[in-house]
Image (cartoon, rainbow, N blue to C red; front, side):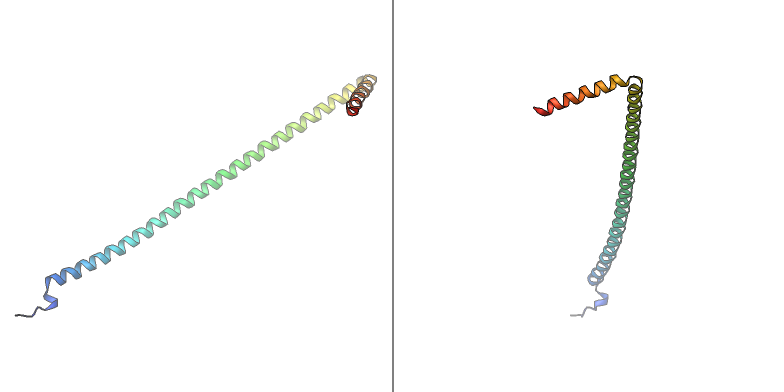
Length: 112
């Protein structure tokens, strides 16, 4: 029987070659997974930034709307105050009588 030289054995050479191919493919797979993870992280970061911008914009819009409502309410209160003051100045006796009547009604309700 002739001895088989391991370097000349085609089966061993094929096994070594396929092992090397598998290692190369595994390394490529690792690199692809790392690239995919970086891509997913970038997309997630972009989405988070987008949601932050939307939240800031909504907060700013709500703040502006509430400030406008406060300003409108203040202007309306000042207008009512001016109207009341004008009515009191034009008919002071009637205004005092009405104030006394309202006070009397409140006192009557408070007794019950």
